[in-house]
Image (cartoon, rainbow, N blue to C red):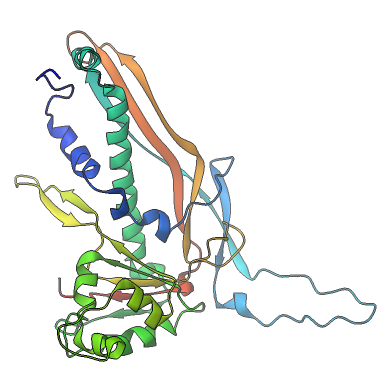
Length: 312
């Protein structure tokens, strides 16, 4: 292969490279807020559920009577999907060089763009999940400094068990960063409660799920590039020092079924390339890729959150 790279090093591609180098398994947004069937128009309605959804129904029917109708005690809201896309201008010289080297430059560009869009979605979902405003007030616990679950004298089991009983639907998934998991999995009292020993042990995600009766534990490992003007870029974790537990119903839709949150897509992700004569001296191609969707929280009462679960 020629020594000339199809893509010249460009500052604006730095963030794309960071996202592209991350393994797909590092991203958990699609499992935390699953995508439902795509809607056919940009504006859609969705149902928000609260405790009023759990009133006991009258199911008794007389011998010749008609059964009572199901009444969904929910509040209907309206939202619209948003567009998320990026452009990558590629000089014609790069495309020509790539063709000589057998490289699909526009195809690589599309992969890079979609990787960055995936990272952006991960950041959006993490922000929603870790925002106390998206939970019932009584379902949020903020740990004081020095009293996090990374302190071996703090009874992590008691804290988690107590919190799991508060939501209107008992959570069936746990969500945390790999850094939080690294500390929680070694909490001495939690290890003792699960393993029966204090020293030289750590628990596995499977141990955690079995003990707390969860279907799965989602551990986010992705990082983002935080740029501060005048300073060198700094890599930081997308998922912060918090722990969330949600009730997730994979069969739920925007208007039926109680689940903490989900994602409403519009159509499918799109990508394409258009000639652009204003790129360099010989023109080039502008590659664009993106998707249209909206993340919505349907049932704030179906989740709970531990803020500052470990020291920042």
